[in-house]
Length: 617
Image (cartoon, rainbow, N blue to C red; front, side, top):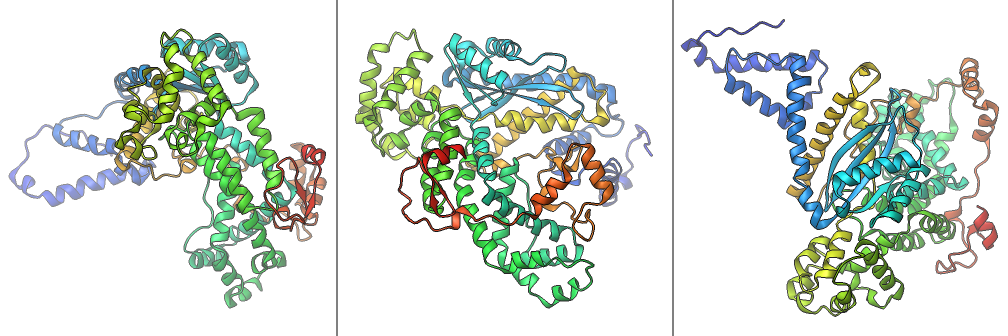
């Protein structure tokens, strides 16, 4: 138990016995971690190291802080320090402009929170959160919140608001855009995830995902098989992603990667002996793993989803501004799908085009594409009249009263012809290497009017994902077991915690110059630890138990009764699970055979669909 340290002077013998002292210190530190259930890897935290250093400097007689001091005085001090850090970016917002991101969330304690963050030039900070639990969250309320944040950040500093696609956020964002000289854009990560959702709803794709889950569920719910799989495959075949459809892609890719190990396992003598002990032998699992049809279908689905997943990773990463990359990335994504899935690209393109044209496409994305030196010169974008028109429209909207309007057109011509600094050797060599907004800041000094537009547009992001990642921070601090914490204190804790996480990420990415983390796996603050129901866990769908059914494949009666109380049609669900596999589009041979046909038509089972049929799907 805790013993208060006295102020006695050390004896020479005690000072010379450094090894024993160190062992004793490490022992008591270990006790703290073991009995207070603190993860052992917390010792790598710089804050832990700073704490131990200061304790050493303090010496004997220094008393630990009380809970009231930590959550009162010292929390206030830390909040003030973090606010100073956040305010240090305001000067940068004046030069590069900024994006205000907002998103709503309801936590496990039913507290409704709306987060606001600010992004500029690869740096994101958490600004504030609003407790909207007692409010009607309609467009008028969201508009008032956006307006208040706009006053705080500075109206002239904001280039755009980025929100989710909720109707109240969309209406409020469009109202802001119509009244002030800034834009509203939807979250690109959310829109691209909806593209994946549309593809995942395709029966042929859904069948492959169901079969793949059947394999992982079977393996992960038999201890011997799981251990044997880890030995042959060199580890697990499952890891989470940030969304359900990203998790599906990662799981399918992992299965295909470990195909050889799984086939060797299910063909081994040990497996044959082990399965003799099963009360119910599932021959379907062997048919899937040892046959070729399933793996061909998995390869086909990956060919469709992989290019979309790459773009999702790009827009979901706030380390580098993505505004100048989205428009060309969508084009490259569609071209890659044509190559990887030549017999399925038509219906996939129809889903992508519908979401792009109906929701995601925006003048800011096109203007950023035109102004990005990486693409402007290599693709001769000046010849595209629609892009030139969009650039003028964006300039008029963001800078309606700029005195340099008369030189705007001539400066675009200088940019096209690489006149002056645009054409110097370092500028030409760094078109692909430098961050586009920094390239303009360095080499656009001869065209100050166009430079101001380019820097402010190219320094922005296209996603509100950092707001969504902050949800897990709220969940970490405000759980059902800790729901008595006041909102003011909760906001201070989240403000400090999340801004510190963003600051640490920035330092790591600057040290490496290019972040190594997978942005979709960056949910480092307890992504799965707070689900009230295991069904909410993204990975659970791939590893859940299959032992809840009777020997004839029917659900156990008490489980079926519970499901029916939740409004689930058990009989319909069972019949759907037993339905035969449908033909898989990506693997059927199209009679025409050419992937370069019109994008307005699709295929089903090798048959060309009419425009009407494609639209109805």
